[in-house]
Amino acid sequence: MHEDDGYFDERVAARYDESAAEMFDPAVVDPVIDLLVEIAGSGRALELGIGTGRIALPLAQRGVPVHGIELSKAMVARLRAKPGGEDIGVTIGDFATTTVEGTFSVAYLVFNTIMNLTTQAAQVACFRNVAAHLEPGGCFVIEVGVPDLQRLPPGETILAFPVSETRWGFDKYDVAIQGLTSHHFEIVDGRVERFSVPFRYAWPSELDLMAQLSGMRQLERWSEWKREPFTSDSRKHVSVWEKPAV
Ligand SMILES: C[S@@+](CC[C@H](N)C(=O)[O-])C[C@H]1O[C@@H](n2cnc3c(N)ncnc32)[C@H](O)[C@@H]1O
Image (tube, rainbow, N blue to C red):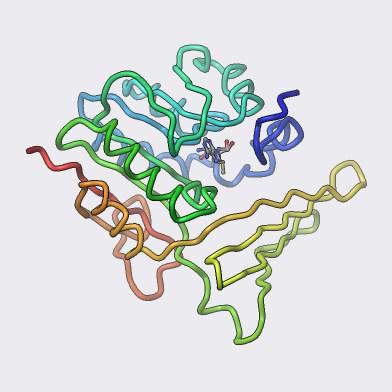
């Protein structure tokens, strides 16, 4: 048990792969890996919030050296227990501020994880930290939802997210601070387990400004990993910023 694991502690880590099973589907993972392999070229990749290695392991298997930064030792223990997991370097710490040796051709932050930083200052620090780790011409890739405020009726604060027989959840918004807390409920062994995490949402344009403040420029914005166009109806985006070569 590690007291400083953050929200992804031993209890959450033990069930992470199962609860996020749809995100481990090859139909979801393969396009992510294809794009990251292409962007990485012959360089190294840095994953912020590497977790149990959902993306890092298949990326390393495709020949890209991957290093991770991760707060939760419990999540890293799950990564280590998987085939190839011992070979991936991980630095324990906060990805907004933790530094690692060397430079990278790509840094990536997937599955809404930028939102785990709950202040604007921490999100800007994260962009600056990434820029400091990228080689000239290197790219920062983020996958994150578009804030869902168009679905929030005036005066309401709660949005439900997809339910099944055994899982359901609610996002509770506090628009004054661009905050939301995701409350997940799941029936495990006949009992309801709750997992609540605070997030800070940011519009794509605010992320672009963070990149600009960090000396990077916007290169691409898609709605999915196979370069599907980003439109007014897109519920998420995959964005790429570049650290200029000069
Ligand atoms: C939603 S999980 C994603 C894990 C993995 N990237 C994936 O796609 O399956 C978010 C991960 O980020 C980690 N994390 C959250 N905030 C962090 C921070 N400030 N610094 C380092 N890791 C953090 C959590 O511990 C967790 O492992």
